[in-house]
Length: 79
Image 1 (tube, rainbow, N blue to C red):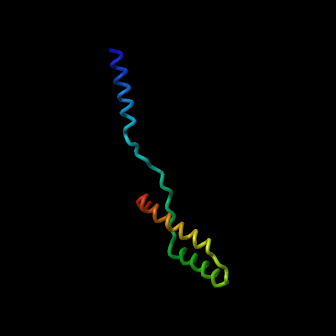
Image 2 (cartoon, one colour):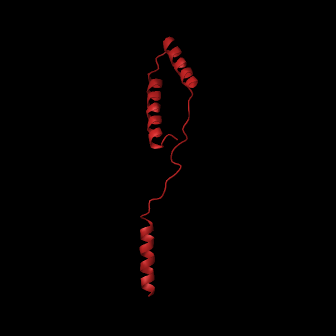
Image 3 (cartoon, rainbow, N blue to C red):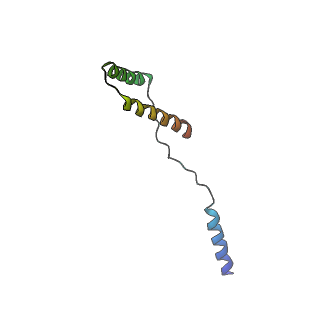
């Protein structure tokens, strides 16, 4: 009798591991940039370009950041 209880307990413990836990809190908070913020950034980039300062790394970082934000928007369902 005791042996069957041990088997049942082990079986239940083993099955409990099969349940998929609900994962929450893995998505970072989404920062909203207003149209004015975006225009201010564009103005800064344009003024640096007009001053003859090449900004290839800045453009690369911003492009990658934009791709990351788009992916997070999909993965985190817009949160």
